[in-house]
Structure formats: C-alpha cells, structure tokens
Image (cartoon, rainbow, N blue to C red):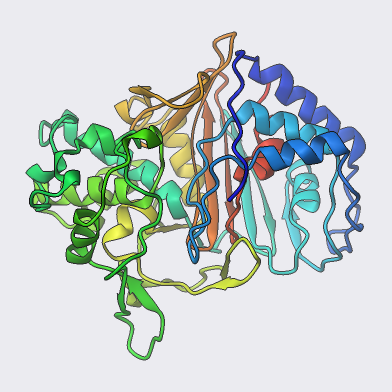
Length: 418
C-alpha cells in the first residue's frame, strides 16, 4: 500500500504549471527521429522527485487481481512531480508509432514496452490530432473504470426525465433487504461518498463465462452483486472512495427503474447521442469483440478479457479512439455538454477538486476548469479530459493498468494549456 499524500492546501494555478511541465518535457526530451526505434536506458530521477513520487502513491489500493480502479487525481501535484522527473525513458522497444508528431513525442517517452498498445487524441475546436503506439483506429480498448463517467451521464438523463431522484435510496430499485447499503442514495453512490470498499472480490465475484470453451470467469451477475453489497459494512470515514460498487449499483438501479437492460439503456441515451458508434457494453464473454488489445496489470502481466456482468456500469464498456473522441466532443460542446453529471455536486478530499456524477472537476485560483473522468482497471487505463472554456479536450486509451495514471497524463494535459 502506497504512502499517503495530503492534497495541497494552497490553490495553485493549473495552466502556468502545465505550461512549465510541457516546456520542461519538450526541452529535455527531444523526440526520436525513427518511427521504429530503440529507447534509451532510463536515468534516475533526482532525489527530491523520487521521494515525492513515493509520497504521491496516495490511497492507491492493491486490489489483486484488480488494482485500484481510479485515482481521484491531485492534478496539480501530478504535474509538478512529472515536471521534476524530467525525461525518463524506458528499456529498448520495437513498436510502430503513427500519427501526429507532437503526440508521438509524448508516446516515445511514455510508452516504451513492446507490449504497449496506446491511442491518444487532442481535440482543439474542429481539429482532431491522433497518435498510436502499435495500434490503429480500429483497435479496441476497455474504458475500465472510466465507464463510470458514462453511467453518470445516464443518471443525469434519468433524473431530468423524472424517472429517478438523486436522493432516492438505491433500495427503492434494488433488493438489498435490511443491509447497511440499503439506505445509500444515488447521490451517495454517484459522488463516491457511500463508504463502500474498493475491492469487489468475495463470494460470487466471478461466475462461469458465457463463451463456450472459455476458462476465464465473467464477473458476477445482479444477484451476486447484491449479495456481495448486502454483506458489506459501510466505512463512512472513507469520505471519498471511488470503487466498482458505486457505478455498478447506480447503473443497475437505472435499469430497474426503467425496466430496460443497462446495455440497451446506455446505448439509447448516451452512446447513441454522443456518436460512439463502435462502443460496446461487454456484459458476458461471448460479447468480447475482435480487435480488443491485450490488457495488462500494473506488473505488466496479461489480464484475461472477461465479461463484466452486473459490474458493466462500472467497468464494462469497450471503445475505439473514435468513440473516445466522440465522447470528448459530446462533453466539450456537443449534446452532453449541458449534462448535470458534469456539474460539481459534492467536494472531495482536495479543495481544488469537486465531483459531479462520477465526473471530477478541478478549478484553479484563476477559475480555469478541467472536467474529466480517469480510470484504471481490468487491464486498461482510459481518460477523457475537457476544458470547455478553451474548447479543447484530450483522450488517452492504453492496454495497461496504472497505479498513478496522472504521471502518464501529465504531458497530454499540458496540450490543453493555452
């Protein structure tokens, strides 16, 4: 378990620090000229940066075999740590890199393992720039825990339609008996303040895969989910604690409230309007699509692809880079830009960061804001970040879980700066 990091107590300006980090990366880490190349050996971090990186592993849960799904990012701290670290290259690699040169310069420094499969994009008005590491526009990635952002958008839509109230107890829609979790409201869950633990593991967590001949076990169905949640004691002192249970319960409650399967409801109300034409909700193993990148855990070991079962609202959506760009556009200035899911409704442990319905928003001292969802689980890391005032957004999809995703995102975040 990593050491705790206290969030900065002073509000700092995001953009100047982002610009500094970007300039630092650009000056000390010149891009390689070959699109197929061998990286340099890593050099050591300065002692101060190394110690800060150790501190920065705050609340990173070791959820073997599913490490921490999401970091409620102290973005300012991550930017600072990344900038102090300088250029840290990985071991030799042999990859195919294609796309925008500025993004490729980031990719060369961030992704240096032969197993890496990455797609990234930056949206600036009508312009979209993309880059790929051993992938292409047809490669599919799990959204992992960033799937919860889609469930948050679905919740906001259901509230607007009058189908549910954010202060309804989840037990109004799902049978949790007299369990402590029965009194939790949709607001508690969507703002990660329910006090549920991070790990979904327990009896019934996995069940036989639907795909014939598969040895991999899918995640459990609705009965297993409810039984597991009903067995849990709440831990209110967790305050702000992202976990798979929260989005899974919200999504299944919405399905029950509307009498519609979650996958169908999400497709109709979020994926369709956003233009995410290739996105899939993989509830069972027989729905796993062709072209799905091989996922890896934080140790670099392969993670078996599986159906997400009743946890689909938390971790079950698979996308291409075009789908992720469509989501970013929809949130930036498209049909989902006005969603209440993106508006802050609760605080977090950090004064700069508020949370909507599974979406976080960081505001600096000058009022600049970035709304985002970031998740790392099930062998993948995904992020969607949008700066509505600047009209810019960025997305990242990769086939490996990260203990501290913001260290990877720091240079991409820098591209959102003025």
